[in-house]
Length: 377
Image 1 (tube, helix red, strand yellow):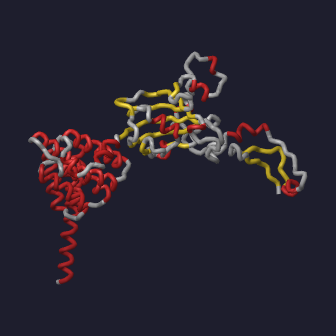
Image 2 (cartoon, one colour):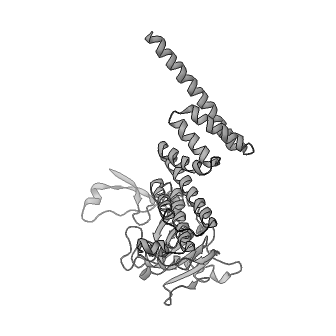
Image 3 (cartoon, rainbow, N blue to C red):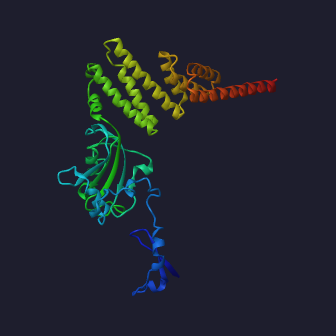
């Protein structure tokens, strides 16, 4: 049996041989010598296996950090090129940073719940060894809890919302002396590119959870609203991730808190009602996504009790009723929605389709019922 190709375990590439290897000779004590076919070597290197197929999304393949005119850096590795424009995050230089896109607002707080995208790179690979972008799933961590490598924890703690930054991380702040086989060799520095999408200050929520019922009732109205806004952000993030069950719990928590709030005037009552309506609407939409049409209808109806012409509540209740087979009731709500919002053409067309479909289904039901009566007679 002859083998005409050699697989390199180091790179995953397949190299052609000039002559085949005789397995029987290879098994002998002296082994067998072989030569590579250099004529076909370049072509074969292009077929090496990659961890990710679509590497065009990653900026390192397009931008190695070399400024125009920096001719003195042309012959050095791209890790060293980007290091030239970085500043120390830690005193010992174990974590360095450069900002690709400035963020907005305040720096992320310690202990905050962070949502971010990241891509991690090794110096000798032309593709990321790990990436949340290719998985299309954001990184969700509580900052400072040791849920990621120390260097990444430290780096993210210096960022602002919507900021994009690169971090060079020495092994002591990354995977240490042993690395993380098979992808991370021992004593290997790495580079992460991170986009901070959002963060929630959990300190405020943690303090609120630790309070007694009396302490919560004695909180100022402004402090309660601040807590509610943080919970709402959490719920919206979970909704965006299609984690509807957990999002419902956040919206239900808002409602429970609002029920215990002591309001001093009509303005505060209106503010509470506004947040309560939004929580019920979001909860209704989550249940609609989950197929819990009865619960979606119940939450939407709660909003209609306060505001009988609320467009989102009309839409959610109408769609829920249609899924529940209540076509006549669904049509009444959809017609009301169309009359109130004639200018919103696209959604009106969507609702009109619902109305037409409801009519067809209702007609079919009447036909089936008539046919049944006819058969019985």
